[in-house]
Amino acid sequence: MIKDPLVWIDCEMTGLDISKDHLIEIAVLITDGDLNIVAEGPELIIHQSKDVMDDMNEWCVEHHGASGLTQQVLDSKISVEEAEKQVTEFLKLHVPQGVAPLAGNSVHADKVFLCKEMPSVVDHLHYRIVDVSTIKELAKRWYPQIAKGVVKKAGHRALDDIIESIEELKYYRQHVFINMVRQTKNKETGKKLKDGENPIYPRVGAIGRWENM
Image 1 (tube, rainbow, N blue to C red):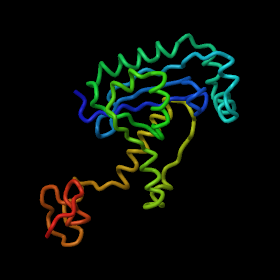
Image 2 (tube, rainbow, N blue to C red):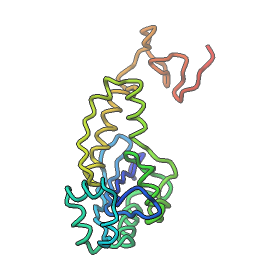
Image 3 (cartoon, rainbow, N blue to C red):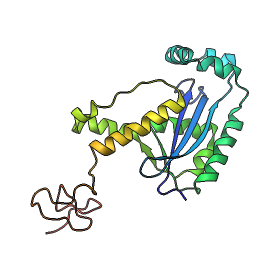
């Protein structure tokens, strides 16, 4: 049993218009709660017709063409139904239904297309998501110097983007979030912390409630 699993999914699409665009690539990794990769899932290129690929927006034409993905999509023999089957079977093998949140960068956009074209994948996941881009935006506002330490390669291939997202969240965990193991003393008094006591704000409990003195 994987402890506190996160299912990392990244998709490449022909665009972001849910009414006409389609999935063309998907990659899946599973980490435990400490962001260690514990299972490597399918990395699939999904076939689409030339008409679909020719209808991509300018950004997708440029970037998917430069990465080689466009031609790989045209050459692929994997249908979206087959891709959905492989991903769902992988998830069933490693995580119970309804337990693991979907994780990624701006992963709400991926989820919209997964709901449309791979509903069984979404049905197996927890309804919550872990979106690294949320932490990124907060870090930019609250810890701008730390946020500058994240350098994105922006390769726009599914597996590369997942790995980069995991590494980015590891960075924020190390530099932004409180390390409750390392910090054992109250920052204001220097006294040893009680179990569950917040080292920065002594009146705030372990789950963030403002407690009466």
